[in-house]
Image 1: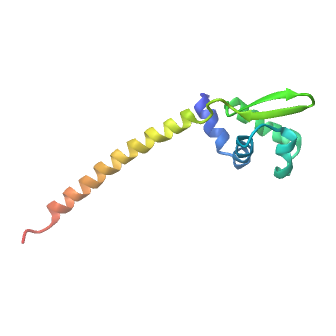
Image 2 (image 1 turned 180 degrees about the vertical axis):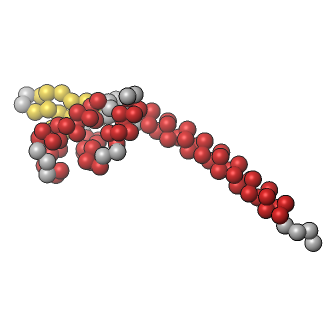
Image 3 (image 1 turned 60 degrees about the horizontal axis):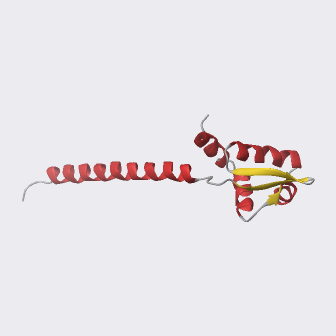
Amino acid sequence: MSVLDRRFAALADPTRRQILDRVAAGPVSVSVLAEPLHMTLPGVLKHVRVLEAAQLVVTAKVGRNRMCVLGPQPLDDVAEWVSWRRRHWSTLLDRFAGHLAERAERAEPAP
């Protein structure tokens, strides 16, 4: 599985998106992440490990806490993939609209 695949899989889960939103505000411990999610530490750690495998977060042990921070360039390739698809679909839809307009012109009876 590619990193891009892992990123999309990680982003597909709403709990992991919540974790990313919180981590985006600054470094945070796994125990602090668990509080608003009403999850056990092992449950949150599973989500954090998925985010880590997708290189969306980086964790480090600081004393007794495991701290999470955003990865260095976590969504650049995701944004690039989405942008390319958006441009591609826009081109296809523009061609389709042109085709429909052309057909409509041919179908109109002459006055």
